[in-house]
Length: 185
Image (cartoon, rainbow, N blue to C red; front, side):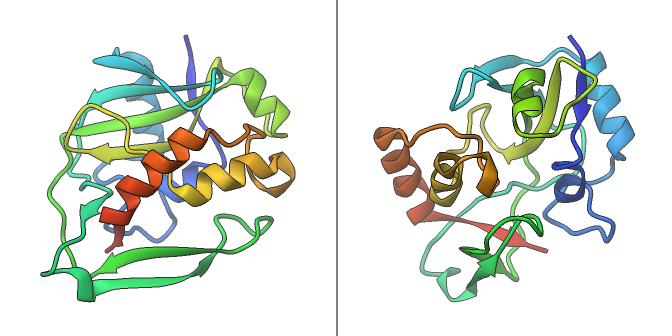
């Protein structure tokens, strides 16, 4: 099985101007080599048959991506409208500023099959393409953000995958993200 870092994920995980809330102490090439050379601790099913998550112990200093919201940090929440790419419509997102989460115990790359990547208009020369990565304290998936679930249901034309909304998954996502937020460093 071969894995490549997609052009969609590269600027999000390894931006030209490094940020504290992205993968640390690792180049995109080293990240890709590690995924191909090191078997995952576990393989989790993603939100659709074409999506898999590979659980790896964190070999970097990358920090957790989600922080629980509490009375001590709620005042540090920010929000704004943003698009992940120039082709996507901006959506409302929220994040913490001025909060430093712990170093993640696990990196969980999110992989899409070669067939799905081609369907979305970005063919790859590998079996699987990394489209994102979770940075967590536990070896389990962080729920997709509610807006990601909605975007996916809109279809590939709007930056999604074309997977219809799973109401139960959406409600689990809302329950998690009501109590957590990402952060920016």
